[in-house]
Length: 483
Ligand SMILES: Cc1ncc(COP(=O)(O)O)c(C=O)c1O
Image (tube, rainbow, N blue to C red; front, side):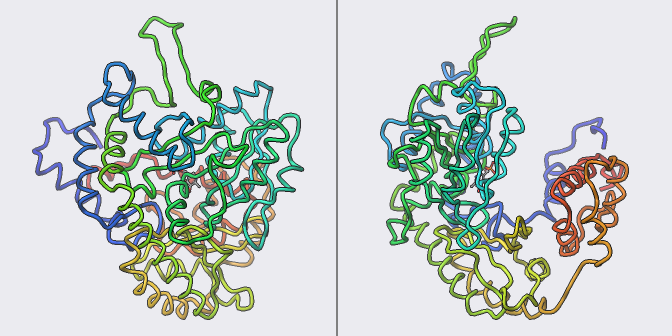
């Protein structure tokens, strides 16, 4: 696509955008059970959008020249730390969970100051930690979790600690199964060995305190636990702020200092950055500040009550469906549904396709290290109004999926035997059409065969193929002009 020679009229630009959006998932309405967090409160959405837009042009690069941003960031950090059991922690507002995690890992790395440090990660810890290790020259040491509860096993974490360990990680809660790790035990290991412990509350940190107030048995997971040194909590998840809003917190200002970056050694302005981004819009911070104030504690409790109610109805409903089970006992509004081990006739990847075909977006999770494949649902306050309809469709979808198998056995066997490191990029590219992915065509509507093939592959091959796929997706084509 080339730049229009003459600027298009506003109406034309908006019409083209609307056309582009036609195939997007619905961000509101409750039928999308991943990626979006819907409070079912148009008033909150409107306020967030309005404030976001009003601060779009303000630059968070320098907190001294836009003091309103500085004041709002201090407010948001204060609100968040109090929510997580501390009146003394310090922190930063960041663009999202991944940035918060990268910064916490960097702080731990620089605190330790050792060569090629290690981060001990239960396999259920979010992939953002492995990304952080990758970016920061650290080694991720993965440890198995309990296969029945999907929680980290403290003894395995302790065994993985070495002289080079710079950080231990626990999740509250994990994304895939919605369970809270035994934070007290893991933090005790950190205390004893003098190693910082990060609790990833990106998805659970805001909601879990409300769930506890509503009677859910949520174990201790925040700064009240001795040994917890840093936490991440995303406001663009269950605090329902517009996207681009997270907070990273430290129990100690000395540790946060290791997060910061300053550079005076060049010709331009003296650069002091609290976070990864330098120039950054004030929109996400201002909107988060506004949404937190407008919803308030009572409002969040009510949103949590609706979310909990929906989650309970879903879990109870799934228990009644022949052939399905919920994995573990989630404390969060995150539910992983697997095929019942006594009845493997329901392939969850086929089930995901059947649900998608009925207008529900649910997310397939591939089997991994002996843990079963599952269908993931992130519930929000908006789920309350639709979960009964979802259960009706789920029962129908299960019958449609029952007995259906996908995947060519010889192809699956062939990919299992491939050595990812000996394959060139050109060979990898030829695997994509085998998986049903054709250049310029996007993803097929039914994904079960692709997921089955990916699941059969050695992990490194999965990763390389996905990168190949990403390259294919992000290739501008001439057809964009004709759109
Ligand atoms: C537990 C957990 N940590 C980290 C992240 C990463 O957050 P983000 O996608 O905002 O970077 C997520 C996202 O779902 C998460 O669930």
